[in-house]
Image 1 (cartoon, rainbow, N blue to C red):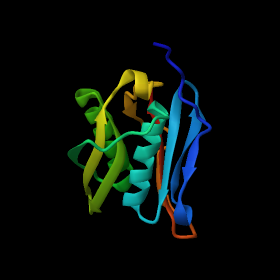
Image 2 (tube, rainbow, N blue to C red):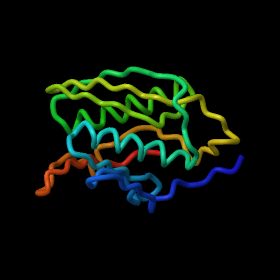
Image 3 (cartoon, rainbow, N blue to C red):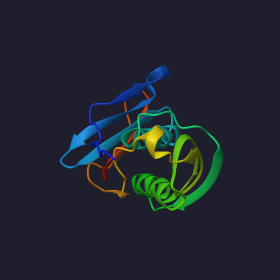
Image 4 (cartoon, helix red, strand yellow):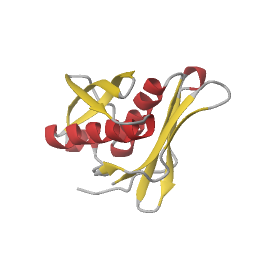
Length: 153
């Protein structure tokens, strides 16, 4: 199987400024999500994580619930991504739909996806973990939230 490095020049933009993007970082990859709330930005960042692994469509054949908590929103973002990465690894799945609810310091998420099919998904990398490098969760002057960090691949 050919291993391709993740491309750092990809992005997807949706309605009202929502979307995700990748940014370069040495041998790793930066991911960023943008949304109207922190929860939407976290969902979009998870889509960016999946897009770093595969360019193929991921079907919603199974659901996995995750929960995490942290002392602030930035640390909660890292916990969220690491929960997604953990579920990808132990279940040998990819996820293409994400639903996040944040209440205070707690996050409840729902991941929808399917088992990895190497030929169809052609995984480019295996994410190892979200890092604190370039970690930022913030609201811009237009009212949009962004969540970004570097993921070790």
